[in-house]
Amino acid sequence: MRTTTLATAGLLGLALLGPLTAANAEGETCRGEAATIVGTPANPALLGSDGVVGTEGRDVVVTNGAWKVSTLGGDDVICVTAGGTSTLKQVVIDAGAGDDVVDGSTAPDWLVQAELGEGADRFEGGAAGSSVHGAYADAAPADTERDVIIGRDGPDGVHSGVVGQPNSDVIVLGAGDDSLVYGGVTASDGSIDGGTGVDEFFPSTLSAPGDTVIDNAAGRMLIDQQVVATWTGLETFWTGTIGGYAIDFVGTAADETVYAKVSGRVRATLGAGDDSFLADQAPRAGSVIDGGDGRDHVYVTSESGLLDLDLRRGKLVADAGSPYTTAATGFEDGSLFARRVVVGGTDSRNELRFSACDARLRGRGGADTIVRSYDSLFESVFCPRFPKAHLSGGSGKDDLEGTFGRDVLLGGRGPDDLRGENGNDVLRGGGGSDRLLGARGVTACTDRRARTSCTAASPGTGRTAGRAARTCAGPSASGAASADHPRGRCRRWWSGSSAEIWTSVARGSIRSLGRATRRGVDDAVRELIVR
Image (cartoon, rainbow, N blue to C red; front, side):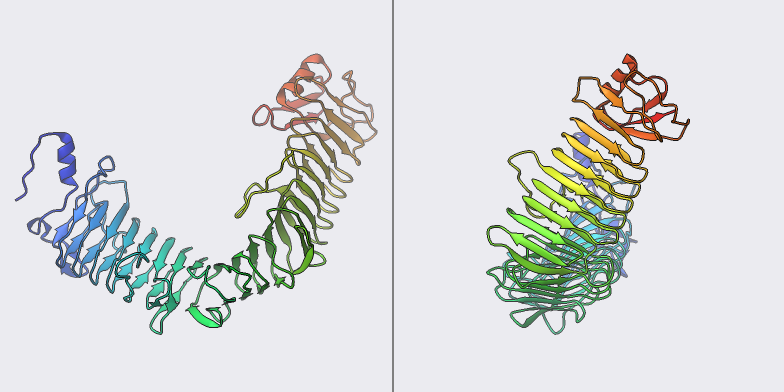
């Protein structure tokens, strides 16, 4: 019989987080065995306690909503179950030494974080996902015994093996989008099955000397011509070399992604899927990267110098003092991060992203998207001055977005969207029905088809003016409308802060002929529809 001293409400809460005795565990089972310990549902406000603590012998634990379980030594069996009305729905398990079994499938909506510890262990996850450490490299002695780790439908993160040791673990990641950090060399009785979903592979051999080959078609990885890992069902690979060693990648018809820390030559054939190749710097001279069939994306970073990518010609030029050219064929989309960026698209649709101090991008044909990207996976580009960009969409329905510096945006033929962002910009829609948007700064807007222009002065001046034309007239400075402008024919976008737009309305330079729609915060783009 358990007794409790009601000294304070806090002590009561801590007591409720402790384990129950064997007598209180009657009727509870775990994988067909009678439970020796049943936990108490966790109180999220009192997570500082030890939770369930086992013994150095064999424990059969039903967590019953407990937030933390430590079973110490022995060949333990742990079943994760919900209990009470706790909203925590996650549990941290330290199975300790021994051949242990952790079963998370009995609480499918609970997240399970488990350290299996030394011994030949088995883990089965639940549908909500799990994080499992089969072994830690700094454990003494290192755990090299065979673990069986089975994921389910949720996103699972698995750490397996020890660097420099044979890895006998059997890993089945299941149906979710999972990740595997893998150490050591796959032993004859070890295996990796990614299952369905998009699964990531992080080998712990990124700093190992020797050329690296990842052959996803054959499902194997080699370093210095020695097989270090074999698998099925993996789609995303993190790799890299040091000391100038080469990277080779062979893809399949699946959608694959390769993240590469490059120190030497790269040869990558990505196959027929919608693939991505991302490098922390430009591959060395003699490299060949082929996107293959499908819609493919190439992403390259340079800490300094020039990156010049021509998607139509399939060439990438890098110049950080000594220019060299590598082949980059079969790609439809590109992202470049460097001090200077030059990109040319194809005659089809392209998505082009950049971060640069000086950028010049041309979409050519197709409905292109050309925008600045603020997300860099590797190095960020530092500009000593405000950046500038010259963006040209070409023919097609294009979407162009500038930087916060001085930009020139050219829409070309087709109905285009041009957004200048902050800075003193020039926006030219060209042919087609275009939308031209500025922000803070002096923005000159021209639409060739409508034969109108607008100018938003610097913030605080309150000047917004339009110029009348035959087919589409904005209001003149005096508020008069062109007789050639039929009602409802012209939809115009104006640049400037809301203060400028509304000041112009108040002063009469924009009369009730127009309707200004306030969008977002004060410095956002404003829309004016001329009636």
